[in-house]
Amino acid sequence: MMHTTRPFDRSLMRIILVCISMTIIAFDSTQAIPPPGYKLIFDEDFSGPLSVPPGTGWGATPPTKWITHTPYGGDFGNAWFTGPSEPGTPSPFSVNKGILTITAYKDPNNKNHWRSGILSSVDTHGNGFSVALGYFECRMKLPSGAGVWPAFWLAGTNGVDKNRTTTAAEIDVLEEYGVDSTIAHQHVHIWKPKGGESYSIGNSSKLQGMTTGFHVYGCLIAKDFIRFYFDGLQIWQTPAPPEALEPLYVMVDLALGGGWPIDKTPNPSLLDVEYIRVYAP
Image 1 (cartoon, helix red, strand yellow):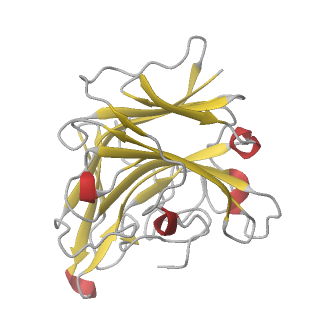
Image 2 (spheres, helix red, strand yellow):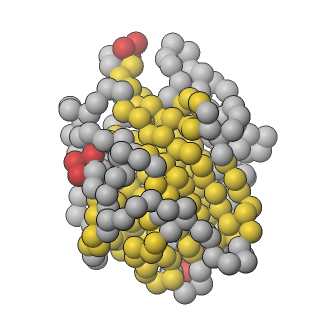
């Protein structure tokens, strides 16, 4: 398995977020609704076998819907992102009754090093699903416990090219750190071609029940603003930088660490995902 430094280095800047506002929200779960007139263009409901390449999870999209690594080739955090059928270790992915579970676990065959999983909707050539402008949502139940770092996020397809000369967007629809599982983080980053940020803005929302039940985390990207939602209610908005208007692909993962210790992380830790949907005007 390839382990490199990821160009989208989320762990370095998350400890102190830039331009943070805090929103406190407590309400019952409701079904998130996309804007009127938007059409469903991507629907992963995990009703069948997970569509990923075998073995290490590297491959092409299509024919599969996902690969199990970042398409730019860098793992991040303190767990190795692992394919569905790597020799000598269990898969971090399982599907049961329409629920995808991503499991972070210590691998007894590799000095108890942590393993976990990520899904990306494009491959290393940028092929697969991406769209410019749209409403993105994921319904999931987050893990609890120190050290967990689940996320639902988007990134620009131009960022896959290691020789790019343009800046690229990363939009974190949801990040949660196990140190405080009542806070949901949202963030917009613009990354320079050779690493480092040219722009960064973030928000933290205090929410209830993220680790005890399923909730919908959504993001509407329009020409003027990026708006973030929890169970269909807006929790934050920020002006949309030009890079965010370019085609974006989808990722969901259960990483560990993110700047926080993992010595007390529950083994195993589970992220449950019911669906991922994208709508476009």
